[in-house]
Length: 167
Image (cartoon, rainbow, N blue to C red):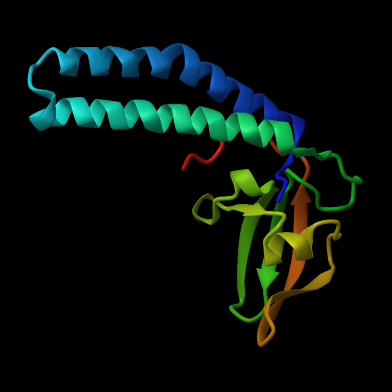
């Protein structure tokens, strides 16, 4: 599946790749050299841990580069009265009689604990393109769903300041 990325997502990924190549890679190589100097490698936990960290960093770089090569670029622009990517949507959940706020983001930035809801999720799909005052059905699966009412849409969004999710 091709990741859907906005221009700000791409910028953040490029910044992470550069940081990992210029800073983390150098630190990891230095840690391996230092651990290797401690003697017998077969029983040297520091050496094995340093190698593992170095390999994890290289794997992350390859993953991000591959993501950029295969990404589908999407716009984060939306009509003034519609919920779009990087907009904060305040909803009233009828079933729970509660009001909550969520920011709609691309799938790689999704983090429900921080209130960042992916536009690929059931809630994100249901809210995207909707307007204030609309009653929206959020289908979780074939046997369960619930209704929410959109109370407000904050278009100030953000510039992608949250980091891209790491593995």
